[in-house]
Length: 365
Image (tube, rainbow, N blue to C red):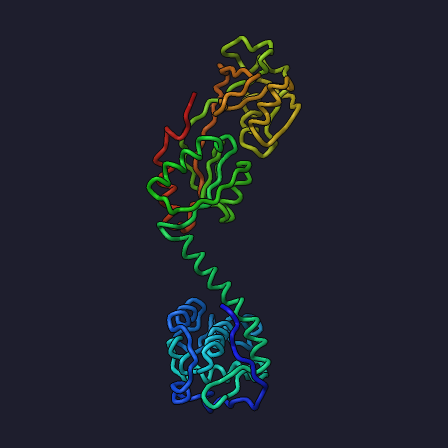
């Protein structure tokens, strides 16, 4: 919305008991205002149907606990009057009686302690104080209008948005394939994608920043709903020239003297590695820690250690992966979301789609 109100000098203010202008004045003027836009903004921001006399939670402008609650609907109406330069036309666009709008403008002036509008004979114009207020209010209301539109778009069943998190090792093929298949039936739904440590993603789910996430291991938290979807085998990955490289399978205890390259603490794969090594009777000697499974695979290829990792989605030269015969080396991939959170239609559709992929989420080697 561009500022196009005509400037004027300050004159004596209109008293509350006298309307700022009349219906006859309005009919003779060329001022214009969009009826639909004015009414929609009034509804969105709390100014429709009550002429600015409505209070949110009983708070008035003089209530220091929440002065904005009373001020915002009056500002919507002030902008309508300023743009139309006629009270009656503004009142019609807002869907409120003209006398009520006149009283609201006078009350706004009283509460601000400054004249905002002056009569021109056939309409009204802004005082310098009115121009100052309009310049501050218009960008604010435009941004609120944009936010309302964005919110409505996010919850739309056909063009809404889903905030979805997943572990790094699923980012190359598994998740892209999942999203491709879902969007074949829901092409307008948008996604905000997050890859992070499982613990960090779960915190974002609890905080309402993520709608759901794929994690491993599965969390035990009563505030979260969790469903297991698939199992993924983990392999002992060794350099191509390693003493065990000629083997097809090994017991994990056979690597007890090796240096390990691991995910950093906080990542689910690190917790699983530590637990499997403990079950095999040793504590891994960690030489390097990282945040990406493929980086760890590169460190293994460089001869800097061994690692417990899922099979690569793209083969990595210089490494050999060995099946672990004992202990059972698998991880469970599951979907987690906040149990009692109200969900939008796009979130519900995608969650049901993901749950329907149970047992076929991963392309196992």
